[in-house]
Image 1 (tube, rainbow, N blue to C red):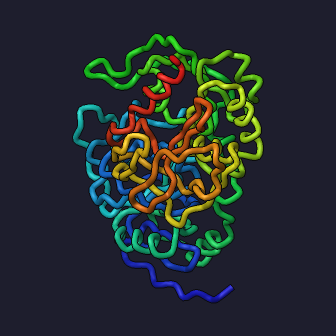
Image 2: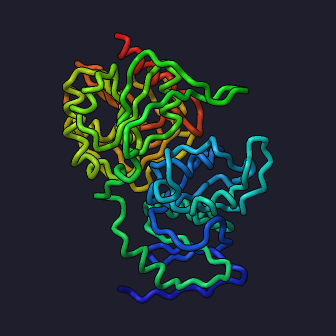
Image 3: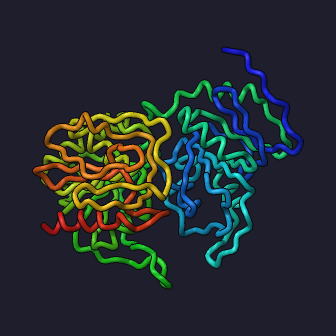
Length: 389
């Protein structure tokens, strides 16, 4: 290992980010004390930090917010996206340019700092997030350790060594720990003023395979008239079909789709062959592509934000979408029976597919868009129409 010369810690430094290449960012610690290991990515959304930090797709990642002012709407018990757990099944750490501001919102019941302490999320503020973002864009998402100690005591050499020793997300199945352990029913719809989340009465039976599903995906499905049963990631196709669903959803989730695909892809093939309508989202999209004969690859930076332009090739419309993924489907690997339906206007990567001869489709982005715009909500209606047909 090359000997690395580390900078002296600045006065008042209570938080650091140690990258695997030896780069050290110093600032003010926020949230939980201790250290967390993960891959550093940046998110370009201007709102929805609580939903972002509780998205299971960020499991084993450290999240840097490019928007400088975070925390002013506080936190609450309703805007949590994961079904359970803390930072062990969502973002491990959070990075801000400025210290999180005090909450000023009628729905808030705790400040962001207090909420992060409760959840075990290690935070760092006061660093140049533009420089960190530029570094990720130029060199890819680095492995790193984020640490917070109110006394400012850090063994930088040990932190860098820990970051260097991490094998990363490639080959890592994170869907199992992010998934529910047993099946459950869901009947909560999208938030409405002033009632909150109304109870729904579904007419079409939908089974959701939970690879790390977000609550608002379930809410959006319920609001279109779905009667939802959520099942664990390891549920077999036979067990799913025994419930006689009208449709099947392959949810979002964290980790390498090829690793989760070792057990999920054979079951997805059977579900496709059943003739039932199938709708894949994010990780579910990637594993559907694998099941249909395609391949997935790791991206340098990934797509993370609520302001990404995607073109729906079936309608010609451009929509602004919410994205959160570090792997992508290799469009050149898709067989002739698969049609590309959506494409990113940032970098041209694949964002959607459908089968020519069966009611099966998927998208890379998040149609529930929490946080984000509602441009893609029509995809739930498209899935509902397939079930009606």
